[in-house]
Image 1 (cartoon, rainbow, N blue to C red):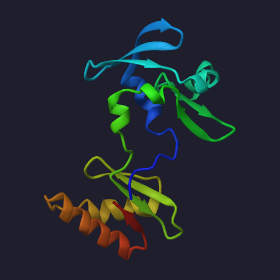
Image 2: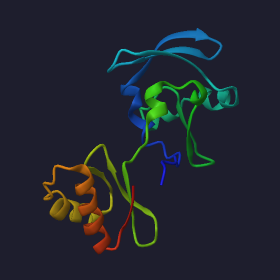
Image 3: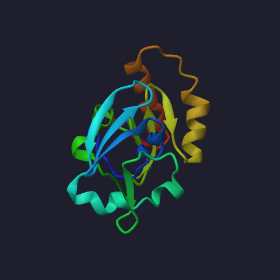
Image 4: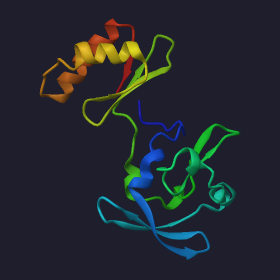
Length: 160
């Protein structure tokens, strides 16, 4: 299953630590600096998102949010206001390598990077800590197969 963004905003809620506005050119155009790589990208706020961009209330809730991330409370969705010109790192991002669904088909957790579990579900976290962290398999594909077996036996569905 290919990555599909649900617009939850989890990824962008801390990107203000990565992306900073280096220069404001005016007319909704900016120079963005990646604080880790030094890469600079010129971005432009998408015309259909000017209103969202002007609303800076997101930063009181999420002070580390990307300077271009906004959350529409009416729709309960996050938006990249520079989506059309966003930096390359944002274009390449997928928030999970493996998606874990519970018995009802709802997201229970994600495996991010190589073997990091992101989950708030207590049962899944416990299974991961007690059974999956003990897997010392160096081959990622074999580790994935073991993960799928353990979680499948516990009633979870795993999507790669």
